[in-house]
Length: 116
Length: 111
Image (cartoon, rainbow over all chains, first blue to last red; front, top):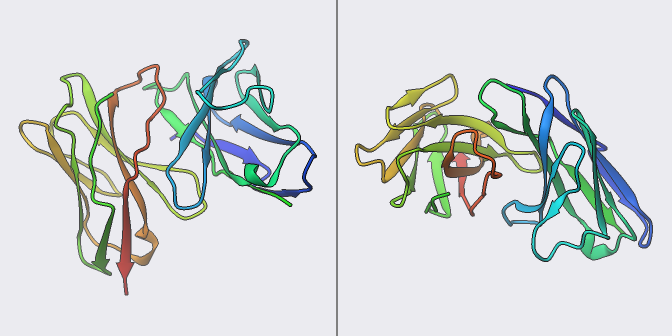
């Protein structure tokens, strides 16, 4: 299957700082990328969907000014958590779909964000 | 996409077959059944998918009932590394929407 990577795998930051998470499709072109958030012992919750070259579509309740998503190329999307607070501490997972044989959705390994 | 219902948790002895059920009574004709799993602190991993025929790959087998209203994922010889949350998802293959993850089944493989 296609490979999706995320960087960093874990990050610890101070409250009020911004954190950028990268998501890359390594061997295919991702026309659509999804960002999920997962709190402990809960399921994945979709935050936003982004199509290459256009603005992201955010799910209800997700602040677009706080979670900045950029999908500038067919292999890279970034999620920036601005002015992070402890309640933003979570597991962030990206997923990509695009020009693969069956247009399926593939997941990255996740990024553990801890805001102190 | 159709909704699925799974038991919240199951245990399985190591080396035995793990049978994970899923109900999807509102599945429509063009929707596939997908199974993913999520090992602790990792991203979801694709396992298998099918439309109406039973499917088998190196990881698991998928048995879909004739009326397609339920399915069972079978891990033939469970190992400790199969301990994970297993998600059953139904959706149109290659559809524009993202995969919707319900609560899944937490499978614990016991030594």
